[in-house]
Image (cartoon, rainbow, N blue to C red; front, side, top):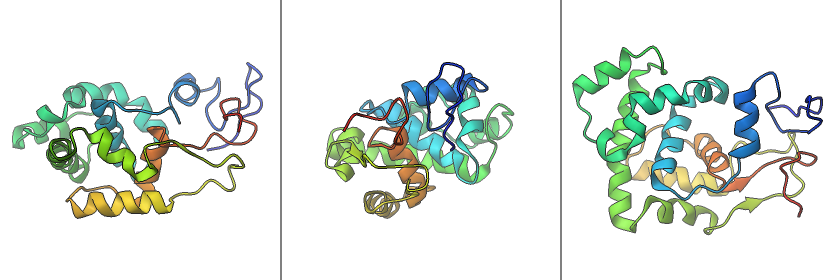
Length: 195
């Protein structure tokens, strides 16, 4: 991610600009905004897993295709997927066709439902890793933005212990950013909170 201070609207952003309206909209309206809806959290966790080894841009540009292919990321539906569903997904050119990531999404949906049953909601479980509040470093810059933190380490370890796949600490930190568990809008970005 790079700071774009030359945007046509005169706003400085951490990433995204007029050359990519989808990334700009994602930055301006979603990234760093707290998410507490279980379905939205499952979608973000799944999309971050598909991002592993890639960048966010192609995933964001395929997000509508992912939503269609995974039936709105309804974990109850995805958890019941069987071999025909896996074959359908692996034949879908609109998404990232990776056998391990497709299998992980299905398995993660099953585990997601277990956590929801145990904690009452996935939201209650996942936000415990930031003390149920958004973490913020008011001095953050692109050079000091971490790839992982003790909180993402703890989240990753607990998810892995439960059997989740594609939940390394870097993926967990990206998820925390996208779910607003951390707000990493950098110094000078028009979305950076006034601390």
